[in-house]
Length: 348
Image 1 (cartoon, helix red, strand yellow):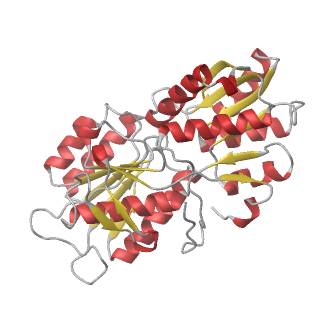
Image 2 (cartoon, helix red, strand yellow):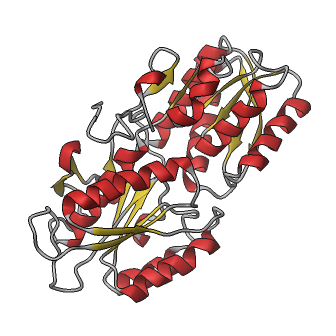
Image 3 (cartoon, rainbow, N blue to C red):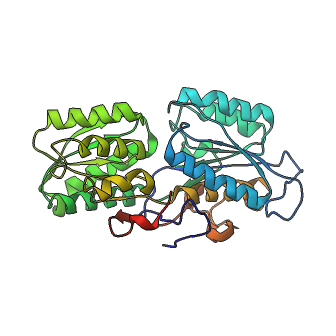
């Protein structure tokens, strides 16, 4: 996969061949007033970015990338969102986008089904809808910008935990919300691979718990896992909030160095825990690139450069050219593993 150095906050890494559900940004031109999608000086597009929740370092980074892409396009982009990651909390923001007549909505969905009615209203108002980071059902949106495949992300996390526990022992999963589309897809794939792959025959998944992408709850769930499973050898946390909270707990506990931790995190969150030996390695794509790609995809839709059909292609600035795959999916790239040897090279 490619590394991109154009943004100071992310020189980048994309993880795995993975695809969980994750990306979105859409835009429409209100029937004939096509904004300027290439930064060539016409009228500007107006886009809204709606992450799962505000105050999350992962989404802070994806929004920063989206804003840089919007600047490159000469478009307007605002970020809105709830403090807590729930589908009900996102509905009012989607309704507002429709009422304001925005060209595009870039959305990380807190539920694959619960937002569809609101999204339908927005699309009826000529708003292009692109999901990113976590998808809705394909029928509900125009495009999904995916960082990687569910199979790829699942395989990467199992590969890392297996290496760290010597291929045997009890493991647990600390996820985000119980209804998080992307988390559940990855967990399903991990469960299947654990059952079917002989390389993991001596690894047992003993528990899956949910921290709701809340720092304190994820911290408490880590403590509970260790109390409930005294023989636990490793934890996988496929969420940036969860892995950081788990690392914070482990770093000050007697389990440091005894219970392995991996999953999906950002270098800036995890650097201290890698450097102090709490975490050996973890993975992630570049969320800044993910937000940027969703923004370029939304602009291409809004300007009529693509319709979202399989085989459509569009330019995404320094990221290069991308093609729409089946079911309206655009794939960002491949995986990257962060460890003590390379984590100092990244800043996001």
